[in-house]
Length: 198
Image 1: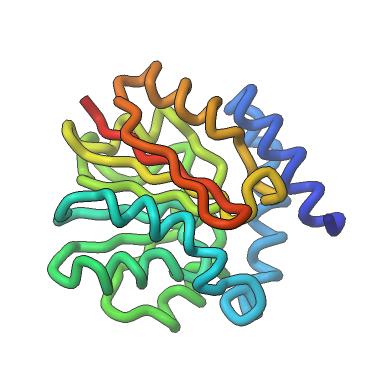
Image 2 (image 1 turned 135 degrees about the vertical axis):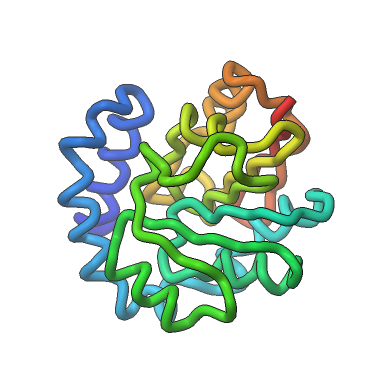
């Protein structure tokens, strides 16, 4: 792993254990992703890296309101728009640089600069939330997911992903907040989990 990837791993481990630490790391992580934004889509996004998320989405019923948390350059949000062309798809990211790229590359999605630890949306706003290689802030995921809605969380390179939370931990944290486990997916080195809000 590069220095930046190791930093992302340390931040992820710290914040999942103690979410209040995000206040300490938010600035450096935002600056890191702002720097990476212009080259992100061309160097780090591929159909192969999106395969675990695609597998999870195959198990999701029709949706109308979707939020891609940590959208980066908007690759997953664009996939969501392709899959559900009538859905309202929103991408949110803490990095203004990434959101600028997502808007430039977008195909009708809406993109907001926002912090995943305090999402700028009302309670129960979305039928589906997606997180691809993203730190999950579980309380916020639960807050904005509508009853019966789904959360799909994927890590494109499994435990080799710099931002990585073991699937068992993700499942346990979601279950503690009223989600039912639907399925796990393994595609190449990547993994994904799908859960439904009860």
